[in-house]
Length: 302
Image 1 (spheres, rainbow, N blue to C red):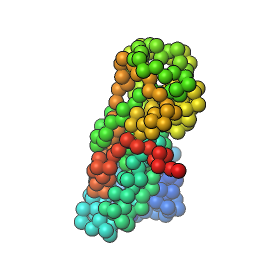
Image 2 (cartoon, rainbow, N blue to C red; image 1 turned 90 degrees about the horizontal axis):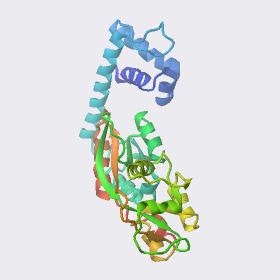
Image 3 (cartoon, one colour; image 1 turned 90 degrees about the vertical axis):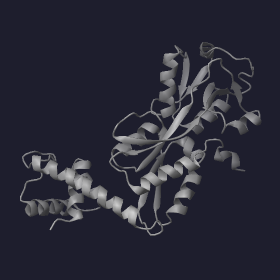
Image 4 (cartoon, one colour; image 1 turned 60 degrees about the vertical axis):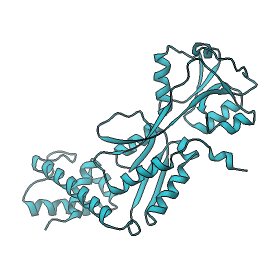
């Protein structure tokens, strides 16, 4: 008799590309996971993995069985989430966000998830966009909230709100309200986000399109560090306008107006196309309802 546990063993060996990482994923010993595969082979009278190869390479029949296993496991999980009550659904949900989301509306999203699914354990991860995307790809996260820069058919995106960024600096560095050309920014040291940041990637491409080249740059992948460097007067930076409004109102930051405004950075909730489960879809909907980049949580701290 074939069991879901046997199919899960096969599925995760293929997904994790090996017996050792699959056993860690399932919290099992390698011998136990190998036994489940052997039980499948005996029950179906086939060879699932090519034992002549050092790595876990599927045979032709093994590849066919893997596809059936993936479909069956997906349908099982979907059935459990659709049929069971939200108040009895016990599961962990791994969500990844960038620093801006963590500093603004992540608490509201987590509260909404807890209200809807009281027994679900939420496991948040705060990292750079590219790192979050890698973890989603490796099935280490269920959903990520990132700038909308990834165009890949393997993933589904739910559009969220857009962030308006503006050039800012310490008033001691520059305080004029007269709009300037983008090329005039080259006179300043520019505090920018690196290529691992979704916003950084979007703006690097945009600067290239507008033939803007900066002579001096200081790269920081972290928003809080970028704000701190800007406040210190080391250079100018693009920062989210609305959630920085309290620093602008206090006179700690000045907005540098440019004749060509920075493009909006649109955010999305992204998940794998082969993981279209009820909980993932529902959390995406909750993200749409709670998304709000207007106020930074640091503003509320004493």
